[in-house]
Image (cartoon, rainbow, N blue to C red; front, side, top):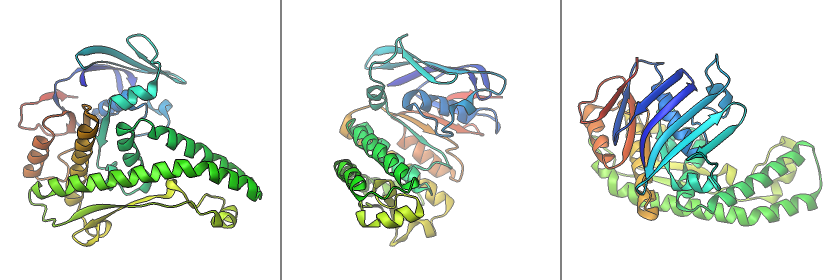
Length: 335
């Protein structure tokens, strides 16, 4: 997949902006100039979601009543024109037509995003870590979305009954039985992908300059469904067990990662995980991937910035920052 350009109408502070792209793109400008918004728009058309908000209405420029993203991209030597229009609901068209299977489209056009606030596996919030893992699995196995959607639908149903203080053990038993197959699939695939990630991390970690890290690994801690917690769930009014409470933790040189990593060290490890994501998806699915990196230079010295740019060199990437990178790259300067 190769993204050629993008046009933004009423998208945050971009009233009517057009940008042409190359393989390597560096978006620069002052804070508030709309750098991250360009990355957000790319992510939105290829994932259906914003990495900044769940409320798409908030993206519309304050004086307008809609936003529109239009882009030309090529995939397997075929050109496509994609448009996402939003006023009160999303309307996505590809070459002027609604896609027959939007899930299949997202599955076949992977995009990965990193920012200091959204670090993927290394984010502070467990929910963001799980979402990053789930997206990775989805790009490898489209059927995984069925297990996630099936489980989440039953989870919401159970939450509704708990909030209403329904005390019907047979009802909950029925919900748990329906959940069980989804849970098995979700947790097996999460566990297997973490093992794959660790293999890649071990391979590439030693090459990061000045990191002084002997050992780094991810651990997956599944939260198995526990029917004995039902009484406690009814008291606390929340579901206490299941994959939505799975944890992903880290070990750095024999200690808990959260306790000892500096900002620069954390960012280097995050970017290493991003690269491992790229390699896993590329090696197992043979898909090309678009890479979005917000504020790449922040917290990294020149040597590490250069290292990661070379590491990502074979992918189409979009970087943001405030200083010009001394490299053969398409520079988009915002005022």
